[in-house]
Picture: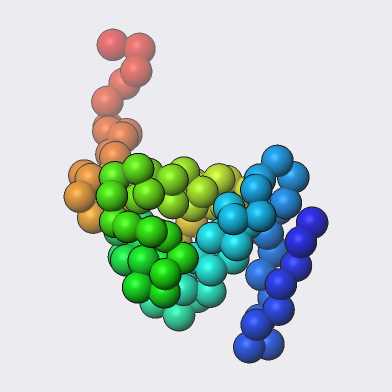
Length: 101
């Protein structure tokens, strides 16, 4: 497990199976999100682009960042609440209906 320390904060980044570039992008995204959260994936991509950590805002680059952010959320590196998707409707379960009917 790789640990990186910046500004007194510790960022846990899982290193197994990921390239050095992917690990660095996750660490950078963690630090960006720790300052601006909650934020969308696109906002994180824009921050990475302006810091020259991704080459463009092309769909291939943003999809890669999205996948890395998903992985980082699933392994607990980035809290789920730090990333929002305001384009989707919240999923609602109707608890008032009887499932047996």
